[in-house]
Structure formats: C-alpha cells, structure tokens
Figure 1 (spheres, rainbow, N blue to C red):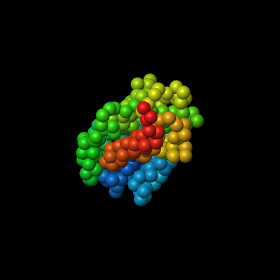
Figure 2 (figure 1 turned 120 degrees about the vertical axis):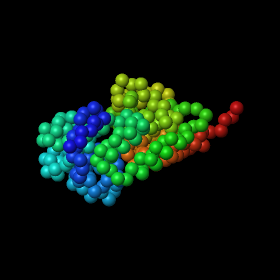
Figure 3 (figure 1 turned 60 degrees about the vertical axis):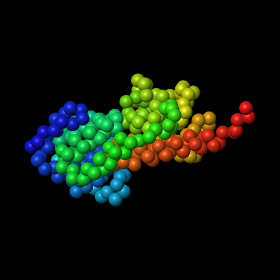
Figure 4 (figure 1 turned 180 degrees about the horizontal axis):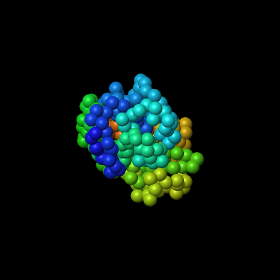
Length: 267
C-alpha cells in the first residue's frame, strides 16, 4: 500500500498498482480516459468526453449512485471539492474505498494537480499535459494594447456570474481579460444586470447555462458578447491544450464584430 496526499491534504492509501478508477468529475474523466483509459471503470452521466467512452455510469456529480460505485469495487474514486458533496465522499470512505479530492482554482494548479493524480494511478500517456503547458506558456492577450474588463454570466433566472477564486477566472486573466466580479465575496454571485459594473466584454459560455446567439446577447445590447465553449473555459484536463487559442479567437471575434457594427464617427 502506497500513501499519497490529495489537493485538500488528505491521505489517500492506494495499492501498488491501481487498476480500477471511478471518476465523479467530467474534466478529470477526460484526463483519465486519455492517459489510462484501461483503468477507468465508472464515470458520471455528465462525463461526455471522450465521446466514445464506454464505462459504467454512476449518476450525477451531486447525486452519485453510491451502491453502483461500491459494486464496481474501485481502487480509487476521483472527486472535486466543489463539484462533489462531502457527505457522499464520506460514505465511500466509510466503505473502505479510497477517495482522491482535487481542488483546482488556477491553470497552474490544474496542471500540477492532474499530473500528481495521473502519476499516482499509473497513467502512461501524459503527452497532453506537456502540450497544455506549452499552450499556456505562449498565449498572447486578446487585446494587445490593454487589458479588458469582462463579466461572465453562468446562469439566468436568476442571473448568476463568475465571481472570485475560480479556474475560469484565471483562464481569462491569462488571456488579458479581468473578471470585474473577481473580488466578489462569493464565487458565483447573484446580481441583476442593473447591478453589474461597466465592462468591455460579456463572456457567455454554453454551460452550465446554455447561452446561445438567440439566448443571452440580447440582454447586453450595448456590449460585445462572446459565445464560448464552456468546456474550454471551465474544464481542466485535455481541453487545456486547445483552450488558449480557441478562447482567444472567440473573444477577439466578438470585439472585432462589435467594432465593425458601430456607426462611423462624424467628428
């Protein structure tokens, strides 16, 4: 038995060879599937990547089927401090199942945390991690001449937004875009649109709320709106490889489109 320490400082005892892993985090499911698919035996219903993944489904991130997980006899269950409920993880630990909890708030934390996890379970293909490091080491800002101020709605009815201490906030920061609610006391503040400060850009991801061209931009008629992939903005894992150039392209396109739509100056 080998003892590791997870992101929240808890000891995680693992056998010398980990053969069966259940993941309760979609982004980590993708990382495990790419790096050691043969070890992954269970995942949540929300684990949609890779699209061809065939494993037992164990319910939702907030409502996992603990009996199904137990029946899979995993050497390890992978969870996240924000996405999964401590009460569920405690039940699994009480059954003698090792649980590894990640707690990821920045790009650098994501790269370090996932590498530690994959090495602990014996992941053989870590090439995407090196690609992700290179992608994030050489990422130009969206606007070359200034930093941008943005708000990131993640839900409506009621409106909720990206607040402080989030992975997505750090992703945007590294692209030269500052979240205007980044100093909020809440990670996901509920604020009406009339309560928002002035911004250069509204970033509308397609998850958890599925903003689209027909649902979202109409609420911000005077501000450029960028529709972006929620996976690229919020998933740490293999999505990190393509996230910098693709997000930058989407954000820049929104600014260019808004500039082109402005009437010419008459001065």
